[in-house]
Length: 248
Image (cartoon, rainbow, N blue to C red):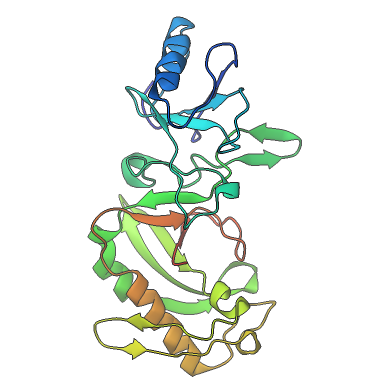
């Protein structure tokens, strides 16, 4: 079966504790898991998640991912809280190769659970669409009557949206926010929760709208490789054809 799966979501495979005990620092664990799955003729497809039943003091999700040839551990970094679970290696990108944005999402609805990753982190290389993104930047109301700073780009005839979740800046009352772009520098910018409508997320001054769009433009600057996004965010939730720019 080809990647991504026609179902639009990855599958998961369980490794019994009797086969291998999860150990992030032991590559032999992954070899044992792969041998077990192949011996049992598991329907393995690139991007499928591997769940270990064994308990471990490190990384409570105990999850790995199949790259098409081998099994890989998820990644863990200090800038992403470990209680959110591990995130995928960069080789797993959304949108490209028609991989759905929510391909690895952990979904529970109407009493049904589709196993995925608890972490909301996804990867996407937006560099080829940077000019389009910079030209299409807007600030206005979107779904649910909420305001957003966003941009759009087209990939293989389908329009996608990138939202910059500026609500974190206001909710945390950041007293200093510095962003350097090609044409503007904002330093010691005070962003107060009083400057945003808590229900609609509307920014209540034109000056701060301009400031936020400058932040957004700066965060969209080209990176050396694929960039980190979220498939869902706390403020806006889950939106169709939308990814959220990670800028924590």
